Length: 344
Image 1 (cartoon, rainbow, N blue to C red):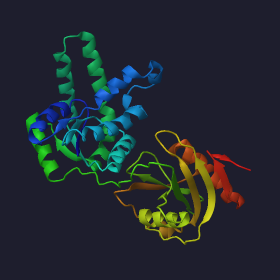
Image 2 (image 1 turned 180 degrees about the vertical axis):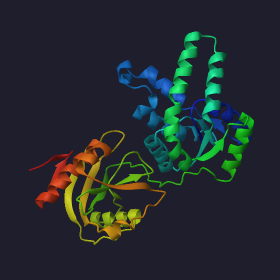
Image 3 (image 1 turned 120 degrees about the vertical axis):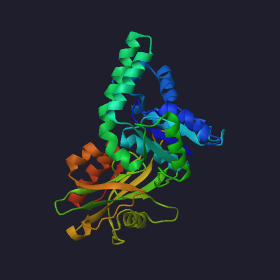
Image 4 (image 1 turned 90 degrees about the vertical axis):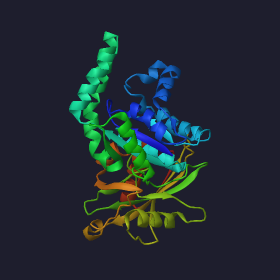
């Protein structure tokens, strides 16, 4: 298990984590910030051009998961992780990958009122003996107050909140320990096993009466996606697409779906690639749209978007696939792609 202590700078994550080690038998401090420091030493300086935060490195996010899994083979756990995580898509990527490895997460937000945070930041500055270090620490901490305020709505909905405004680190740790014992902050997201070879996946394009396409926002990985999923062993792809839409959205589709695109996705480590199929699910009438369901462990949102809007929401590979699927729908003829390029 991982006890992830989230919160902005000055919320008391590190001091609370140290106290928490005494309250959770077998626990070990796991600080992913060390991974970021290591990457700064190992990667070429050019890789950090335009990057202010090592969390923006895909390698860091993957290493957080891989290192946690490795540590849990050496220690009984839980791992106590004091780490600010304000971008929801990074939360999805990291927590989803941990879930895929069957590593449960207790997500706890240590919240402190802004006036207290500013006081703590000023006190931290005064504790340092280097004037330049004073300004750097203060500037970095203050710059994260607004991103933290912007992230609060989704953080409050995702994590168990412990208000540390009037608490000592020990008191905060006691609150966290009790929350862990009662199961508070559990991230019950879908556990999709990490692929070990090429996969076959089937998605469905569903439309509204304006011709916009439906996208869904998974809780277990970053970015928007089409309804659908991996085809199970012995399952027909079209049947898998119908099953996934029913499980994800509560919509029963006819078994005979029209194929729009078959795309071979090239392997790109750490991904294995494989075949990706997109089917035409047709236009949904308004009364069916109003009854769309969202399983909280798998999806958090859905949205009908234009092709242009989808370009800013989907990763390039998925948007390219959508682009050609829409062209195939217009022409009434399926397209065969290899690495996103039409053949023939």
